Structure formats: C-alpha cells, structure tokens
Image (cartoon, rainbow, N blue to C red; front, side):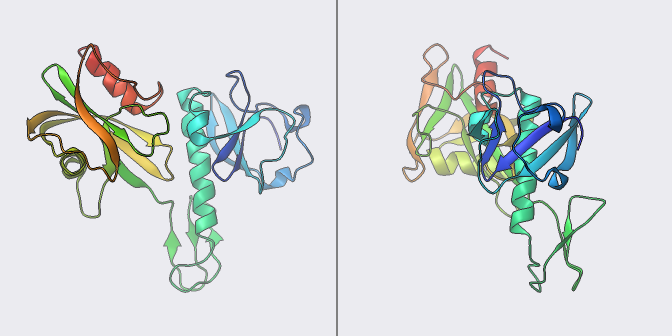
Length: 256
C-alpha cells in the first residue's frame, strides 16, 4: 500500500497528529504504524493531489503517533478540507457497519464495485449511504439576534436554532417550524447561505438567515436551557470557530 493520507477510524474516533499537523501522511513503511493488514485499506477520496485511504480498527490501539479524537474534537485540529474528509470516512464506516444484511430479506449484502453502495445478491435490493438533511437558522430583529443554549452543549454557549428536516418537508418549512417549536418565534424572509456536512452521523446542514415576524420567546425546555435576544455588541459565549453557527454569527456581527 503506497503513499497518501491515512484516515484511521474507530467508531466515533479518528487518529489525529497533535499540534495541528493533521492526519498521518506518507508511505506506510516510513510511518511508525504497528503490524496491521494494510490490504484492508480503502481509497475513498483525494486531497491536495494525493490519495486518501481509510482503515477501520476494532479498537483505538496505539499507532505510534498521534491521538484518537472524536469527530467534533478533530474539527479544532484540522483544516476544513481534511475535517470534511474525516466526516466522509466515518460516514462510510457507519454505512457499511449498519448495512451488513439486507433490510428486505436478511441475506448478507455485498459491496458494489463501481459506486458507494451495497446490494443483496438474493432479492436485488440496493442501499446507499443515508444522508439526513438538517437546517440551522440565524433569526435577527433589527440590531438583535435570537440565540439559544441547548441542553446537549456541555459548555453552555449560545448558538443559532437548528434541527432535522422531517419527512415530506422542505428546508424552508423546517426552518420556520424549528424556530417556532423551540422558541415560540415566527420568522420570515428566509435567505439561504450555504451548507456544511456536520458532526452528527450522516448529517448535512443547510444554513439560513431569517428575520423576526412575530411572537414572544417561549423556550422549549425539553431541548433548550434558554433562548433570548442579544444585542450585536453584547453577545454571550458563542460556538467554536469552525462551526457554521459561529460563521453565521460573525457574518451578522460584521454587518454582512
């Protein structure tokens, strides 16, 4: 197995070189890896003109270099291009591990050699990686912005409202519904900005800006600790840099 970027994954963890150096890179023979069966490595992408190869390990063993980090932790060590590829490597791993048997007839599935899919040799059923669309929206009211503190966030920062799109729902419908369900606020004048693969398994997040329409804040306490309006010059603790939420807030704060 030759030269390239090495993506070693184990469940929700990935091997990252400390001090911002990224991922293992180079020839297998030149890296201090333990004796592994590198024939199981799979090329799945290209980065900076070099192949990306992923290997799934049963446990996060000592590889001689680096440390094992979760996908969310690796976001703060890796440049965006590599971080997106780490997410892709983990999503491929999740897909293959959760589609080992046919969901229609329970026969073992087989890899399709010309696309990322698995197929059942018995009934012909074919499965592809699951992609779950989600939205994130920054609602503004003049010089104020609507931010919420979620129960799942360990550090208590405030961020934009977000949620998954439901079956049969448009992205725009999901934006309006999520804001109203979580905060009691109605929003309108939606403007799509951009999207980002996210750290939840198989999630693709679409970012929107919106404006306040009506209503008073009534935070859904099942999901939120708090929700409130903040002035541009008096913002609370914000989500980390590298997140699409932080990029949206900074863009608004700069008047863009």
